[in-house]
Amino acid sequence: MRAIRGATTASENTESAISIAVSELLQELEYRNRIDPDRIISVIFTATKDLDAVFPAAIARRIYPNWQDVALMDVQQMHVEGSLARCIRFLIHAHLPADAKIYHPYLHGARHLRPDRINPKLDLPVIAHKQH
Image (tube, rainbow, N blue to C red; front, top):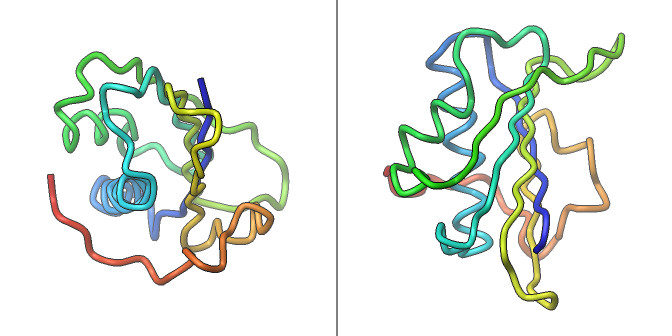
């Protein structure tokens, strides 16, 4: 089992803005990693306390109906004064080969959270992917 992390920021605390952010983050994950949904075990989403318009897991379930057997959970990110605002993170557990190259997507305002996880060869502007 392997873990994949990623994060992004929403432009505002609205269902639309959060939906766009979550969709973009998951599409980037799917596009860069080519993960078979049947290999995903669970996804934990966190959101900062300033995002409460919609559950990220509900968005994931809506855009990925094939995740019906994936355990999804939403939790509030611990608040630390001065930390990144309107941030959505995920931690995905999946059955992947030990030698699989993993791209951890960090988008928009979250790009600086883990610069060690950014692969310059793959770190291209976020592109419009197919809608599910």
